[in-house]
Image (cartoon, rainbow, N blue to C red; front, top):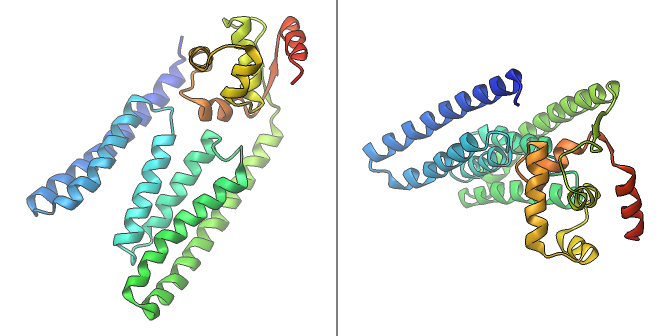
Length: 249
């Protein structure tokens, strides 16, 4: 059963998503009235992300994609606006909460930075003098956002250190032995192909088992899975521990 707090949190999220949906709808109607159909197509993506967020409010990946999408749009078409930095910050925060940057951190951070500067580089079409001026302003605003982001991150990290990790006891979990072994392998970042070879089962079977694991945890996908168990001490049944040792990982 879901707790009242969880239901209320989902209700609040969906109300906020409905507000976003209304804003995107307003801009679409305004674009149609002004015969600016290019922006109709642009804002339709916002509508699609809003619908996906409404259906899957726990999956913040859609919020991250929405943030990066509008960040890129604002940087490319409205270079004088600095709201793009805020959109990118929302995207990065949503991915951080989901645990997206836990694995291959340097590569993913590098890709994020390259995407940001690639959008800024489009401003060179206004000429080098104007580009240099806008670049200086963007770097100043970006530095401010980075400092604020790291201060918030440091504060949250300190709070997490002050509180002990939660314990997830899988001894009484409604999962099969095979699902518990897959749970362990997933938590240690083993890929589907490797798990398939080790357990001698097909990828489609692994995906079915993973869906059961995600349903048990109340998450949507592998990113949410890592985000949820990242701060947990996991207890496995003794016979599962023995089977895992026999796998010779």
